[in-house]
Length: 422
Length: 211
Image (tube, rainbow over all chains, first blue to last red; front, side, top):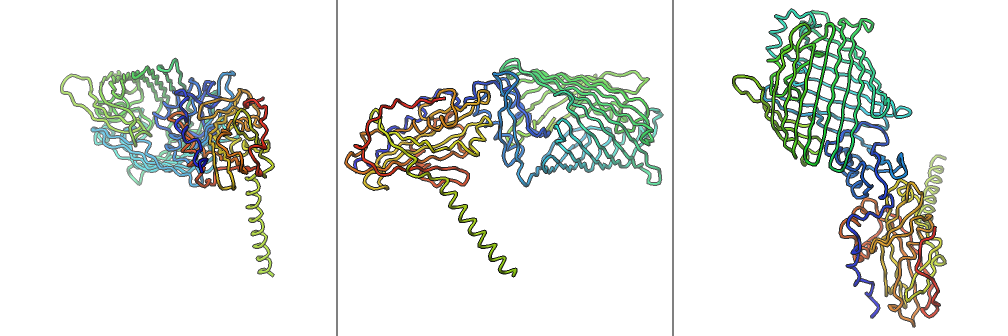
């Protein structure tokens, strides 16, 4: 029996003793990660911090442990049955591409809150969504009550169908249906009664229905072009009155890219231009063209960040209220009340913002003007301070808690802004 | 007629199921003729030329650039087949170079790495060659049985083994005492009885991975 129980237990402690810290047994760890993308080109919604983790891996040597952590995190955020990574040869012999494969399983359903916000002047805004993915098809049903984005509060449902992979996966087909009930601020109703603006295409409407087929093409990655049609029906406040239509051709050109100068320095650029042209050719009662361009540039170095945003817009013709530009909400010219600036919105917009961040602290300065063609724009300014980031259950979407102040003479009237997914 | 057809179908299904189970068992255990023992430099080693574990899902995972881990247990029994007197356990991490299209193996205990370029068969042989028992532990006057067990590590369990404190021999022995999970592949090979004196010290060098 002297031989029994001699199974090298004495050497039990030598396990991994000679491992060097950070040693990766994967032979591919010698390669640099060129890119990380999803195989099915589905527009998955990931938290800003997960995207940041993903970006941190790009440009660095492949680290199986870090990649497994990312995969586990994505699996959790997407509530997927499984997420696997696959390596493919990169553009040069020292690099590899990481392709993520999401297995949503049979019961591929997801419930999410894409946006939730509170503005002490404008009230609550919330969007809840449920989505089902069946192969390359995605069906989304959402409930929305939004008092922030437009001049009116609109509450209702949004249903959307996406065919995410068409042939080369460079095309995505979508169909969206929206049904909203509108509510107006007293200031807006008063302005509607007294306005003589020739640029306003319709008065107050009780509800609106939108049917919107579209197709998105990857022109040259990361440049995408969305083309489609929007058939919008506006039901007037008076039931006896005739409904009006705003049927438009829609085009959106979008560019989104990020760079990494070093481990500590990263940059991101998101820019877009959208055009909506309502025309008689589509049997539209209202005729107008709406142009909007925006760009956001982020520069991150260690724990510091600078974000610069600019937005410009112009409407020609008679556009309804939901198309008009607004400032003084929870995202643009924060601290001002949009009803004080222009209760009907404007057909011209110019806006800029600079945000400085250190860890989760944020300080921002906003400036801009919204006005009607032919009038002199009045530039307004605001500033604010707050915290932003992702914590615990909020990892999925960054939260913001801020106090914003309009910069004007007289009393200081701060606005509290809180929410997720800004 | 319908009842009779159903019975025939049920019998056929049962036979099919039994055949499938038998095939599964056969597929997972290799006959004793597939494991050879040799002695070199005071150590007992085995050779298993027909043990191919880089197959199916593990191979697919490797071709995707991920790692696949395998636990090996080499045991020797003396007197009777159940009287295990010596045991060695190792965990090997296999990966596949997506550019060079070659396999690489790391013995996790001491991070001993295989050569950089290897075929699947050479990688398998390197694992088998790199598990050994000291000959001094074995009785020279009794019949011996050698057994090699290989288990794939569930991908969900194989993260961070090299990043933290590693995996201990105790843990590996404990892992082998557990039944395999359905998603784990396992292979078991045994030799016919032999005596230590029958093993002529082979003039074998420590196994190096050949391309």
